[in-house]
Image 1 (spheres, helix red, strand yellow):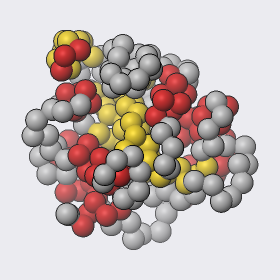
Image 2 (image 1 turned 45 degrees about the horizontal axis):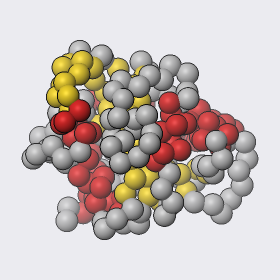
Image 3 (image 1 turned 120 degrees about the horizontal axis):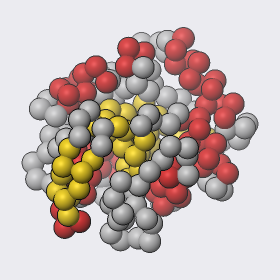
Image 4 (image 1 turned 60 degrees about the horizontal axis):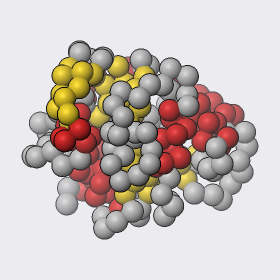
Length: 217
């Protein structure tokens, strides 16, 4: 296994992939059919509780596609992953997270049933003109009864917006070692997220996000 993937935990957990689509696209999503996607940001919510945990699942989502397997694989052919949020937790949180994401201002469901073939959710894919902040999401998740504590994040993005297109053929820049000290920009984001969570305290499961770099914002 490539050592760059070791930054992701081997334990199970839930995650949100953030993908950016720059141009209108018509895509066939497996057996769901063919759909028109507008430019914007798409958040896909999933869980990885089986063998390989988050590390194995996120490695799949961030690696070049060989053959589409899940609904999200078809979308990734046109919309590269630009940001990633995850949390190590044995509880399957994807359904509540999908509901929380869909309840944020500006959220729309682009395709009914996307990523939700095996559950009763409307969809696990939510579209936005601009991506919501981690703080806004944590606040909404807390309101729905799911603890979403934030501990440490990283200044570097899994793949920064300025280089995300290169991830499709190589993804070599998407797993840089996190050795530098967090920038003032990161500290501002950290304080903002902490305020939004309303003082949930310490000791709970960690909710993690890889931030886009300052140039990407």
